Image 1 (cartoon, rainbow, N blue to C red):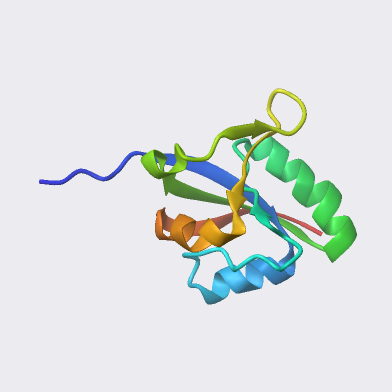
Image 2: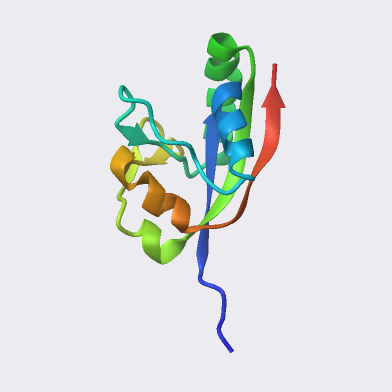
Length: 117
């Protein structure tokens, strides 16, 4: 009997366009980065994701969403945690070229847990 792999919960603040692309993947994958976006930044703290969605995405996109998803912990160990500011402002920096591999290690669906307009 095989057990499920250990997972880590991540959050991602996102705007409506990116969310539409996630929906098109049946909530299973993040879309490719744009050429000017060399890094994919999931975050390790829900409150940090809320602040970005509410304070940045709403201002720039008219709406902001916070998503939550699980990724295999062993896979994530290749990405060092980056502190982008205060104690809870923690991100993973996933190079755009590795996003397909990252998506392959998402367990379950990407869920929208907060919405701001």
